[in-house]
Length: 348
Image (cartoon, rainbow, N blue to C red; front, side, top):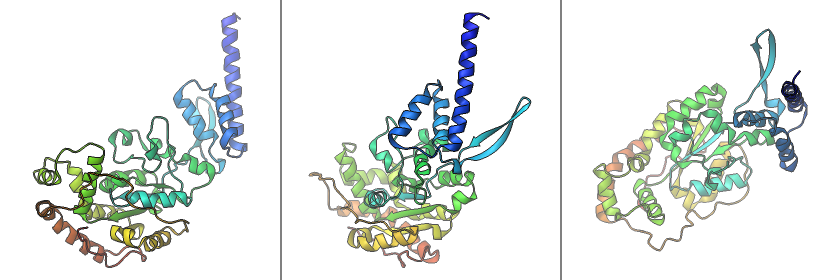
């Protein structure tokens, strides 16, 4: 046997032995964390030259064996046992609305023990709160495993009772959420809970406008902004979000209303302890701490009053939908702790 063939043979035997060791560890070693996990991972990763192989090894090796289901596959004349990974999907989605207090509420919940997303390399820090999977096509197209990887550490640590993604843009993406959770199995859909905070639409529009001004993404006055939206030249997503009833009806078409908690922004602002009580009753858990101040941006150019012209322009867009919302919530009551009747909106 030539030297090169002998080298390849030894390399193959070594790799085969390593894979056997991987299987033994995956079945018998308790879940690791911290430095021990990192050292073991670095040692074993050298046997996996491809990124895809390393990814599957991490998911298999560091997953709790109790969560691994097995299926038989036939390769040639042999039958092998291969692991089927349990997807770690959030059982709580905080779907919005944008600029309605989701950051304050989610921060309180995460500090109280709710498991949040892991932030991967080259991702901004706020992805720990909001993953932006369903609302960003480039991320959504990467599939459910891409999404579930962000919450795999919740399974590893055993922190699975409350797993949450608090992306406030999800309110306008009910179809994608329905597809992913339905394909994950009936249990995933039946255990899913949604929370949404609704804010008077014109006030929310003004807050979003100030947010865009703060980050230098808007050059129009608010009146000009309102007119551009009416003419269909502005960002259609902004106004679409404020037509809350359209989206809630779609969510209620595949989820029970008992699974959707609708909260009032006015109550979050004026009686946060009551809001905390509602959320704790809805989720079935206790979370210590208090809600932080809703708005922490000190913007000297912040517009605080809506002009009569802007109010008139935007009011025409939202008035009818607001009335539809009140009727929908009254005729389709949600969980028992939800505020009823839902308070009517008043311009802040």
